[in-house]
Length: 570
Ligand code: PEP
Ligand code: MG
Image 1 (spheres, protein in one colour):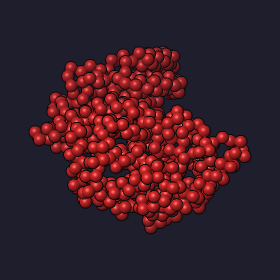
Image 2 (tube, rainbow, N blue to C red; image 1 turned 180 degrees about the vertical axis):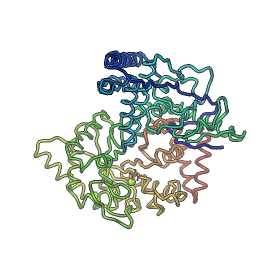
Image 3 (cartoon, helix red, strand yellow; image 1 turned 30 degrees about the horizontal axis):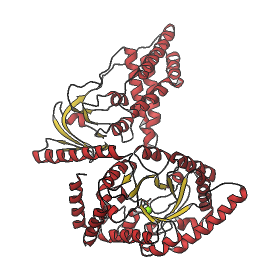
Image 4 (tube, rainbow, N blue to C red; image 1 turned 180 degrees about the horizontal axis):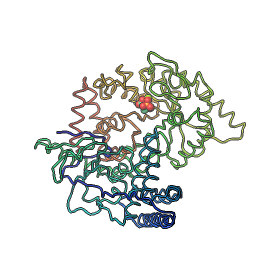
């Protein structure tokens, strides 16, 4: 039997259940007299102090847990907490427990009502803090998961950040809970500890028993009860492969990516903002192959001004310390809108007024962005990437505009990188067929397989009904990729890939063999990609790619790739 939830931290665990029940407290609802007010206020201040002290001395499971603990110290020390509780004691003549409960309820409600998923989850942090201060008031030492007698999958109504920050990570194989979301602090801690977790299971505590043998599949987001022998065996194999991949990822993430016969490959990451960049660097990325600037525009209430954009690009360039930062110009339209700018209703938005097509009509948007990128270019190794290109003229037009903006900056006495490189996305069939011409006017290619696949196959990338047809391993897509890479190499230039295919470890060996020079992946995949590259030769990869490119259907191609991947045990 399968029970479903939300996968919050990748992985698989097989083992017995430990049902973890919270220490319940009964709140004293008594009224107090005016004479008791001061005593009650002293109690709350003592309880908060004692809780903060405990947090300061807490031994945590990880760096992420340490950060959460630091955040909780800040929240608990916030004068608003003690002031609001004290006011309630004074004005309503209620005892300290009731006053604290009501203050925390108010704070929790404010966060729960927020639209932003991340901020919404901060409600759990306030509940956690409130509960712990309550334990202090009552002199209760709560149950914890800090020392378990055996290996368990922990099942609970809600594991608080305190629970996950202090749990016995050597004995917790994974956890699942009724409540929680993907961005809760408990989920984040699980991710950094590499412990599989499924959240939002609603009533999992009602459906499993202490000691029961289960499988926790935190890739699919399910718990399997009463698994048969074949299922257990399949999961044991999956578990071994994941364990090995994880070990290799850790081993290689900060290494250079060089094949055994000496071909140097760049493994960089895709980002949507500074926080992605920070995590990408922590995963070993050697730069940024795609900065999707749309998020900068989507988060604002109006088109972000030059100064605002400049400061973000500059910060990213400086954080990279000379490693490449490839900034893509705004790719709005298609599936991405802006709430302060009305796009006309279109029959085919993906084939419509999108990306540079919008900006060529609204050159003020383009000017603001290109000037901001140019200004940031003196602070690092910045390159420009143009989306949705279909013709030589589009690149020429951008190059002309760049000259104009450079001239403007020169007159204003503002510095920029005179030789800033400009690359284009290869994501339209036109750009594939025109690759040999397009490369004459730019410095590099970056293949966007997400769009390229949908346009080559005429299969909408977001349509569930035909998702089985959407496959970048389709030979038509593979042959296009091969041609594009060859065209850039003939011109003495390079090709990278920033579409999802570059994050897929099943594709790494094949793309390497096809001659890809740069993989721009999601941060978490950087180490895995590097581990594959470091353990093979380019010569063998080329032979393998030739073999794959001979095949005329996607099923056979996938089978061959899977067989190769099993050989690598990756
Ligand atoms: C792509 O199309 O592959 C790509 C990287 O761009 P986006 O997903 O932002 O359209
Ligand atoms: Mg695209």
